Amino acid sequence: MGATEPRAFEGILEHHLAELGAGPKVPVMMCGMVGSRQGWQEAPYVEVPARLETIIERALPVSGTPREVRILPGIADRSVETPDVMRSEETQLLGLGRMAGNGAEGLVCMPGTHAKWVLMDEGATQVSGFATALTGDLFAALSRGSVLRHSLSGDAGLDGASFDKAVRAAIDEPARMLMRLFAIRSRALLHGADAAHASASLSGTIIGQDIAGALARFGKPERLTLVGGGTLGALYARALDLVGIATDVFDGEELARAGLFAAAVRVWPDMFATAPPATAANP
Amino acid sequence: MGATEPRAFEGILEHHLAELGAGPKVPVMMCGMVGSRQGWQEAPYVEVPARLETIIERALPVSGTPREVRILPGIADRSVETPDVMRSEETQLLGLGRMAGNGAEGLVCMPGTHAKWVLMDEGATQVSGFATALTGDLFAALSRGSVLRHSLSGDAGLDGASFDKAVRAAIDEPARMLMRLFAIRSRALLHGADAAHASASLSGTIIGQDIAGALARFGKPERLTLVGGGTLGALYARALDLVGIATDVFDGEELARAGLFAAAVRVWPDMFATAPPATAANP
Image 1 (cartoon, each protein chain N blue to C red):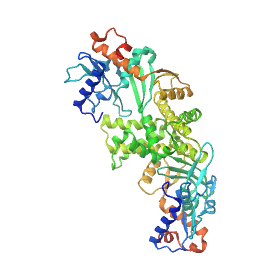
Image 2: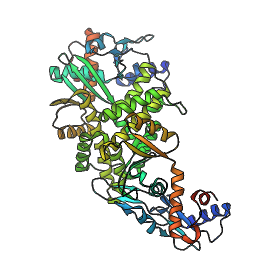
Image 3: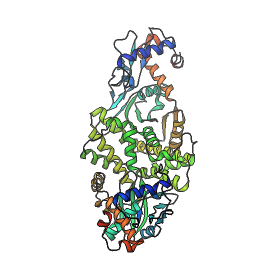
Image 4: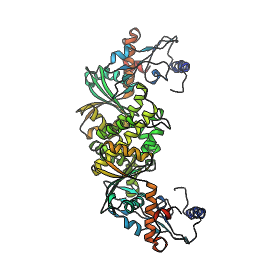
């Protein structure tokens, strides 16, 4: 987003809408980095505890466009001890509240480059706290930029036993993370461990450390909501199962569409009141 | 070393020796990656528990050169649980034994790209165990390749309070490392924290995690030997002091010279028997 001039956003949006055949009266609800300081227009963060209805109420009307366009704000924790920010996950959480109702109350795990752990309360209508971990970003930085790059290869299959062992070790003794990372290299040198082992160990070490951090911060639930239907979500489900936490899995893109639609219905009731999410989201 | 052909090593060595005015009878003792599989000739690892005298006894005579050249082997831990390797630190430890005697018994901290934590016993004549942490490599990978690069600048001075706080947090609660890493970015976004803060926090988080790992693996000593006279050594001394561990500091290059000289005296007693290390090491 840093490279897009504010004036260019409208042209890009109109180009995509024209391809979809959307007329000039169709309003647009957006979320994510488009509302950041480097985006189209800045939608100021809502602060925790953040009611999800407040996210919708503060949807920023973009100025200077003939079309109705709004940007949903993100959420911030401005405390000194645990400062944190999210943009776009709040919209997925809005969708989650619509799709799962009360069932989404409690801890929500949202894996990714910057994994979010979110505590939902008040019947899953409010975000009371959250924390971001440098999970995927760390994995990528180590894969590309450390000595471990020599031990990894692009498309190794999952070595499940190595993944499980690394997850357990990270959760049992998170202090030893830096030593376990180097041991991935040593096992390749001394024991001829292959790329599938290295990749699974690195993945398990980092995901295990992420989970250990969440348990230290939010306590250990019996069950949590996992936002991630793909490969990464499956790894988290497996790792969480290892420590005795059951998961209800939702697909992140579906949740984002449901959240955007819920916001649109509230902001423009005459346009969307009766159409179901799936139809509206896939015109 | 990976790019140097075995045949090229001799020419490079002779070029440097000619610049020093060393005649063809001067023998050469080497250590480090020159003895690895990708080096000049492979000097097989000595295994833990490793007597430092054994390192000297197994100094590999390089074949095919008119000059007497030997390469000191590294040390390996081939166990399944804590596999590990070192090349060159064993030579520093040899020098440490010569310079500090019994005083070097116990835990030795050797900061760096791949930081070593070494347990010396038998009057500091033997390495009974060691562990390598991905410390400096992780710092570099995150500085260059993660979202934190936006918050860091090259030459920020040390923000001591931020460093100390990060060290304490890492040691008190190592599980939360990935969240604290992202919080460095959040503090820059929300509270305007500057590059000096980000750099000190990243450094303190990683050094603190390294120390936490060593304490978990080797227990907490009252005092340890720190090999590192420079800026990084000073950061480790400061961090160790925060957790109540006193340090005896030695310079790594001095130790390497003392170790190489001690080995040379043993292997070629007629050449070096009476010269003191400082003179011989700085011809």
